[in-house]
Length: 232
Image 1 (cartoon, rainbow, N blue to C red):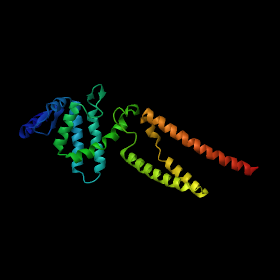
Image 2 (cartoon, one colour; image 1 turned 90 degrees about the vertical axis):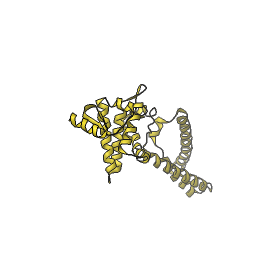
Image 3 (cartoon, one colour; image 1 turned 60 degrees about the horizontal axis):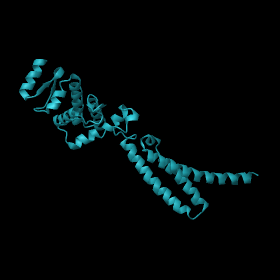
Image 4 (cartoon, rainbow, N blue to C red; image 1 turned 180 degrees about the horizontal axis):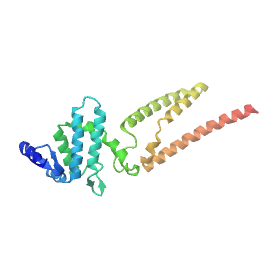
């Protein structure tokens, strides 16, 4: 096996690396070559490259293969440190050099790279403790959930605003319609976002919700009073 590796390396001017693995490129960043001397790094690099090869060849299930490639890239990040922390954000010189090498070797253009990186945040969300999400730029909701939340919130704002204006006519039907729209609007709230809000944002949200609750309680009290009068 070692002889075959050396033969292939000599034929293609490749660089043999640790543990009988070959990185298939003619030249490389010295930082990457140094990192690849570690068998764990070499294995993780080749695992990521294998996933990338499957993605390049894929005609179906490309999304799942992008997710797999992203997962293998995070495996590689976890082998390095950025300061005192695990290099979750992929900022260490070693990871940067290896990722560049990987994309170059696979012939992945900028668009293909972005498509893979699109899924890295989801991998980080699965692996990083929740208490550290903010530190490593992990959103509590996926991109799809954030997009859906923004859409629902925009619809709720428009819907409630229209119903509020209609309620200005002070008809019973318009007031009931407003209540229905407010209920629909509150469904856009996502409790998962609360832990990552700033202190000022939480205070503002609390104040607004408490004010809304006070207005709701006032109307509920009026309802209760009318119902009690009718019961008697």
